Each structure stands twice: as structure tokens, then as C-alpha cells.
Image (cartoon, rainbow, N blue to C red; front, side, top):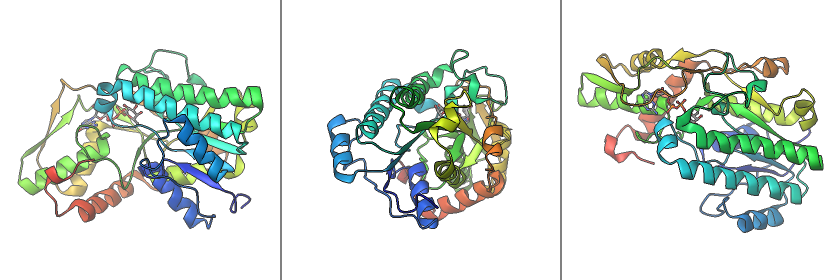
Length: 326
Ligand code: GFB
């Protein structure tokens, strides 16, 4: 592989996605990547980022660093979601340009697309309609990131581009019930209910929204695959600004809940708190571009969920529910 000896900087290596990228490079016998914890380098601070690039001189940068969370966190911490993400992207992309980085890949999110986009969602649907309001600040920051990469390519010829993963799940996810995404929340709720003998579990919204879920190790595999073979000219040359990374099929939140309840062995009822937001009714990515490049997911949803339930029990099994927060 042509990049095996390159100096690759994984920004956000302390998170679920960044950690998985580091493990994937290790599996492929890559040179040890450059990593920094968020307490060592605050990526919102331009001078700190500049110092990091001066010291490490990365040849490739993958941006997995971001302020992320589920539907409630996005809605409640709107200022943090837009400010932190804009600063992280702008600082890293500008430093990569100034220091002559040979390739940069920015990770975004499927929430960049219009709320009522046609399904499955093609890359070219970006900026064709209004966004879902609960995550508009986060989506605007990620769209700005896409446009930063595109603009640095068009003005300076930088080999920078973006990839848009669908909803992700995996080990080291955030299991805090207020700020997490739906999969870790449901795993924790069903395990806690089983443990305490509760007869029902409350979900947010109506249970009818449809979501597509990809295991984080598949995402990491796809990103490294693209890094090895795709240049920015390939992306922009197709008249698009980014490439979707998805699972290919979606399910309703009610079906997801039934699957997780089955894995955990919870046999009680599902209640729906309809005062909580549903968010986008559906966001299934069109992955035909990625498929044409020869990549498909390997871990099916049921197997992935079983792995996470098993990991959660091993990691938090002995603790009370109040002992788990992030
Ligand atoms: O995963 P989630 O928080 O994010 O919620 P989004 C997905 C769906 O699950 C929504 C429902 O319809 C929620 O109402 N849901 C049901 C729950 N019960 C729960 C629960 O206990 N916790 C949570 N969190 N949801 C986020 C965006 O949207 O997805 C971000 O806000 C980002 O910007 C991310 O794109 C991937 O899929 O709705």
C-alpha cells in the first residue's frame, strides 16, 4: 500500500470514530499515526493547531474530530455545535494548506442533506432544500467543512475532500442518556430495565422515523479504502463535493428497538414519548458511488448490535446506571 509509511494525523483519535481509524491503520500495518488528546491540543485554538503541524509535519490528515451528539444534544447545545465544529474544521484545513499536506479527508454527517430529500439520498442533493431544524447548526458547520475542502481545492489545488457517513454506532460510543444517539441510548435503557425488573421502556418520538446504521469499524475501513485510492480530482471531477458512506438499507426506530430488546432479552413494553422530537423522517444514503469504487459494508446490523451489547456488558456490566456518564 502506497501510504503505509506516510505520517498520518488522525484528528479526534480519542473519539469512537478516530479510535476505530487508528485500529484500522494498525491492522493494515501502517506506520503509527500522529495522535493527540483533546486535553493536549484544543483544535478550536488556531495557534495550538499551527504548533502541532509545525512540530509533526503530517503528510495526510483525517478529520474525525468534532463536537457530536444525538438529537437532543444537537438541539440544546446549538451554539457549541456550530462554533466548535466550524473552528475545528477551519483551523485544521487551513493549517493543512499552509503546511503542504498531501491529502486531507474531512468526515461529515448525513444530516447535511435537506430534511425532505428524495430517498435514497444522492451526493448532489446537497443544498437543494431546508435542513432539519434540530441539527441545523451542526449541519451548517459540516456543510461549511465540505465547502472549505472544495474551495481550497479550487483555489489552491489542494488534495482535500469530504466523506459523509450515515448514523454510526460502535464501541466507545457515548452512553449518556441525554446526549447520546439512539443505539447507545436504547442498549442502556433495555439493559437497565432488565436489571431493575421494569416492565416498560420509554423511547423518544413516535418510533416511525427511519434510520440507516453503520458499524464504526466498517466506516473506518471505508475511509482508509478511499484514502488509498481516491484523489480530490476524482470527487470534484464527478461534479460532486463529497462521497456518501452508508449501509444501504434502513429500519424504523420501532424495529431497531425490537431488535435491541431481543438481543438484551427485555420482554416488556415500548412506550413512546411523543413530546420528544422525531427529527428527519428518513435519511437513507445512496451508496452507489462508493459501491462503484468497490466498497461494501461487512458487518450486518444484528451482528454489530450484538457486539456492542456484549461490549457494554463487559465494560459497564458491574456498574449501576447512574455510574455511567460521559
Ligand atoms: O440517534 P438520534 O439521536 O439522532 O435519534 P438523529 C434518532 C431517532 O431515534 C430520533 C429516536 O427519531 C429519536 O427521536 N429516539 C428514540 C431516540 N428514543 C431515543 C433515545 O432514547 N435517545 C435518542 N438519542 N434518540 C442526529 C443528528 O440525528 O444524528 C446529528 O442530530 C447527526 O446531527 C447524527 O447527524 C448522526 O439521527 O435524529
